[in-house]
Length: 487
Ligand code: AMP
Image 1 (spheres, helix red, strand yellow):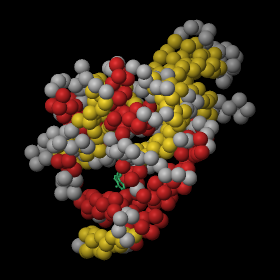
Image 2: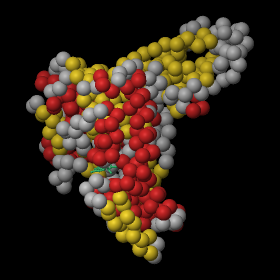
Image 3: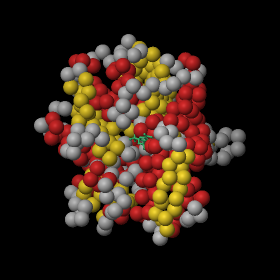
């Protein structure tokens, strides 16, 4: 049975399949290759998805929702009419729609998929994506990091060997990966990114600055006015560089305001965001121990990399123009479809081997031996380790006659756990003994999907505990999943 590859994007989603010796992108029921990641309720309170929902974003903003990928892995609920949805449930609705389109196109049931996620998606967000697939009736065979997917598409399609730096800026996230493709082996050397930086932030910053100039409080706008304003800014952003200046007619409250958009103004708005984008690029180069000159090709993926100012910033950093041979909107889908082909063991792909890395550090909290203060982060799996990986660290009791040891599980780069992301914890009983005498072995195993499993073994008693990090914010109980499926 066919496994499809899906790019579940902040702005748009799409799917494809590996056939014979290439990727076939699958059109949706309207004949489009991109399905806007927008969900709404129509006048009869039936769910609508994609372009049809997007067209009602302004006129029915209380019954339409977009950009929910940013809420993945959180408990935040969005109200549509009189119903409430988590981002996981909304994503499931988009996935179900893609699944149905693929089934119509292929003429057979589709029950398995490879879904792309931003490399920088944390454990919670990855679980939320897997759950969304499940709710849509799709077994998620693999979560693939978006830049890795783009790199496979690029490497295989362009039949190029060398070291690539992939910059992927979509609507809501920015991912950087350094990959090497050599004799059929695609190796990821480093991944970095910013989960809260994307094309939408440029639009938001434009809107905020315009409101500031016009001395209008954002909170005074109705949802319709805000959506309308965002749409106008979005259109203006796409036209930057094509016209000297643009005059926008903004209808806010009872008034019309004329607002002039120039390249210069946009450049001022974009500068802080572009500075933020530089940081993960530098970090990835640093982690891979490479200079910009060592990169053979800089590849751009994701709609927001179409901004001229983004391209020129990257051009300046690397002293050459970046490549964008593949349609940036489809490169990730193509890579996910190739990964799906690899999963279904397609012969044409039998020579390809793919390795990936864990883009962030995973660890636990420990007590500082000198100060006896808790809350310090002990890395167990270091950022950019090749996956799958399993690492064991021995921890000892901190106090005399300690009865239990609690292993906090965290993700992040800060030396204090309070500044990192909490993923869960495990508590084991230990026999009373002087401080430092009782020990537990803590094993972290991180798989190809970017999901973490933790095992703890008490050395003296042999007692073991295991935790698959699953009960994360936004995850649903079996009953909740069933209820959600029936909506
Ligand atoms: P994606 O999630 O890859 O579909 O990227 C969507 C983002 O790309 C949105 O924030 C769009 O505003 C942005 N985008 C798409 N086309 C353009 C363009 N021509 N110029 C500037 N930004 C664009």
